Amino acid sequence: MKITWLGHSAFVIEDGKKVLVDPFITGNDASPVKPDDVKCDLIAVTHGHGDHLGDAIFIGKRKNVPIVAIYELAEYINSKGANGIGMNFGGTLDYKGIKISMVPALHSSGISESKFSHDGGLPAGFVIELNGKRVYHAGDTGLFGDMKLIGEIYHPDVALLPVGGLFTMDTKLATIAAKWIRPKFVIPMHYSTWPPIKANPEEMREELEKEGIKLLVLKPGESFQF
Image (tube, rainbow, N blue to C red):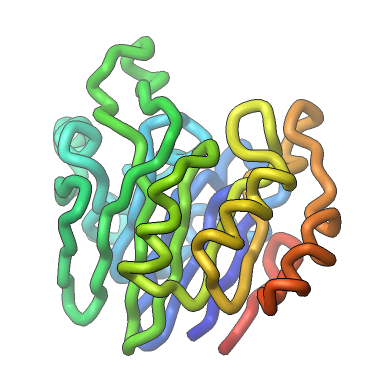
């Protein structure tokens, strides 16, 4: 499996098939790609905020790729002419060999284009499985106790965790989350895109290593394979 960070919370996760998550590319100065450059089989969007919905509709329509999101957000995506696939917590979608399970996140989900009405539904995370390997993309979230259950039920190999603080967990809380989830690897995300969420993920390394969890600090455009 190969995981490529595109900056902020945007990732390409691939193992035969490619899943693009939270494609905030336009307006993301750290992104190493342009929306037209991205090739994928499925797009997953954790919630309706502009730095996560991002270019999903543009890419979905341009490349004829379906977009998975919570039901209300998928309906909004459909209203814009893209192919939204709605699902909800506890559900698992099997799409052409891609298994994607929706799990809760502790955040908000208003769609900025709709003037922050509640049609964004609720925020979510995803456990994405390709050829038996699993990645947990936590979306934007605070720390919550059911992260232990996500670890116990799905046993992700890799956890993609926000660490920027202010809008999500900071490095201290993300370290606790990682101990609860118990992946083999943690990749920090959603930090230092803008000054209010500046963070140093290296603060997590010592505590995670004590737990046998490897911290992988990627630069935008870098990949990790396992």
